[in-house]
Image (cartoon, rainbow, N blue to C red; front, side, top):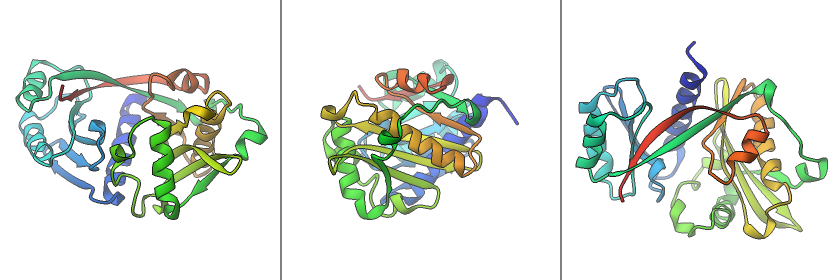
Length: 253
C-alpha cells in the first residue's frame, strides 16, 4: 500500500491531472516516469514538468520540461525527493534557478478536528460553474493577487466536474471566501482556501475548509491532504494535519 507520503503524493498527482483534464486550455503529457501538466494560470506550481519517483528519469524529465517551457507560461520543475546535482543542473539549463520546498500535509479522516459553529457553517455553500466568474474574482481578492493570475483555471465546467466541488462563503449576501475540493478514490484534496482581507479573523477559513473536508469524507475519503500557505499552516495543523513529506520545486528567478 505504501507510506502515507506515497499515498498522498499519488492522490495529489491524480487530482492535478484530473484538474488539467477539465480546466479550459489544460494540457497533459507523459514520458517515461516524467509527466507534464499545464493549466495556463500564472502560478508556476500549476504548470509543471515533474517526476515524483524516488529516482527521476532525467532524460524524460528534460523532454517534459522542454515541452512545458515552450508554452509561454510561468512554470516549474518538481521532484519528490531532495534534488541531487543532476536535477539542479537540469533545472538550471531551463532557466529555473530558484529552489523551494513544497510541504504536503495530510490527516486521516478519523483524526480531523471540526470546530466551526453552526452559524459559521451556514455561511458556506457549494457552487457550480455558473458562478465561476464570481468564484475567480473572490479567489483573487482572497489571495490579494490580480484576477489574471488564475487565467482560465476555474472556468469552463471545472466547478461542475463530478470529482470536484467549489465553495463560496458569504457575509451579508456578499461572497468573501472560497474553497475547492478534488476527490480521488480514497482521499480529498483541499485547495483555494482564501478569505478577503476585510473578512478575516472570524473563522471563515476554518468553516470553508471544514465544508470541503466534510463533503469529501461523506463521499468516502479516508484521508485528506493539502499544500499549505505559510499563513494557513497553523490553521490546518489545528485541524489535525501533519507534514508527511516535502517536494522540491524549481522556478525562474
